[in-house]
Figure 1 (tube, one colour):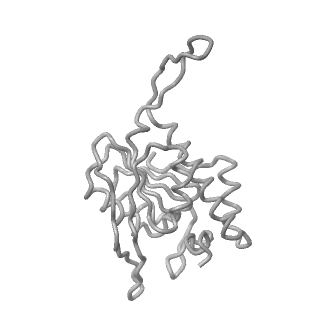
Figure 2 (cartoon, rainbow, N blue to C red):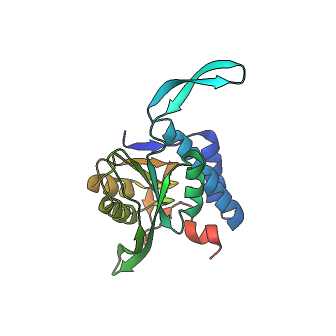
Figure 3 (spheres, rainbow, N blue to C red):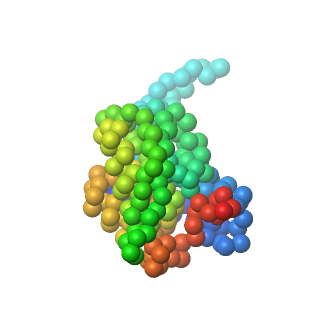
Length: 211
């Protein structure tokens, strides 16, 4: 299925803490880091594996090697995704990193996005590209950032990672990029008149960085 909801009990516990308006910025950032790590581990479980033999200090043992961990590109959407990506890197320490700075723009009731900086390493056919943005609300930002990814090359696998998504955002991304997979911790039902997720958790960037 193109949409994977991380229903791990600890992930849901962390999300509950993030939703709570009483959670301060430091704990909010820590929660995003921890969720990023959990999402990364869940994603790593889907990579192909092979059996390998290793020498221990006392003999030989058969173990598992995960194929493709060295072919990962993580693209973070500044600034809200920074803590989330910090956690993802725990699962993919060899990942190459890209950055897209995007600003949401509202004109006449229409939500758009302006990309004012993009730096993504060259993407190849055997790469897995993970685009991280905590809130997949309208899907406009995620779709626009994926455009930047494809300017750097066509990946073998494309994954959009969020903490909370909406049906509207999911539909927009998959209609434009049907090859994408979406990993999220929750799908909330609606957007308000400012295109914020309800109930959501507020503005992730503002809460993470106390602005």
